[in-house]
Image (cartoon, rainbow, N blue to C red):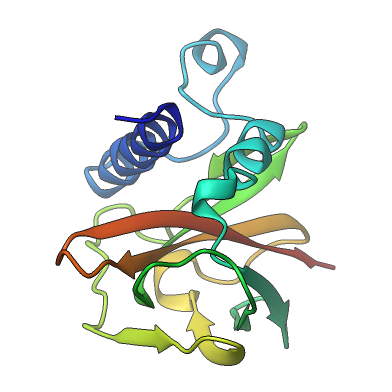
Length: 175
């Protein structure tokens, strides 16, 4: 397994662990200093370096539009890149908040409520753009002013029926 694939797998596992801990009642709030050292949170620089891996350059650029306290529109542009199959994106996402230069999973409005995701799969056509709305009000309520990001997994369905997944980020600010 290539180092870049291992790094992506490690980030995916971290995201799943954080997501499951939020689902089962552990707070996603910013921990105090002692707890912070044990969290497996990668910095934005590490994520950016990982996303720059040329083997995973699928020509994807995500942007946030129509940002409000309860949602936004994600626009996904695909141009060039090295995708080997059909690109697609599913509904689940993770919302992070920036605090003191580090990203943390945002608190759920009701930590005892299990998120329900629609079974939507959107195809990302080559050399085009597509948009979708994200309404986080049920999961996170209204967001306070600050810097946020949504991590969205995009899959490349290769001809061998295997799928490679890459995580992309949409950065935005609530003022």
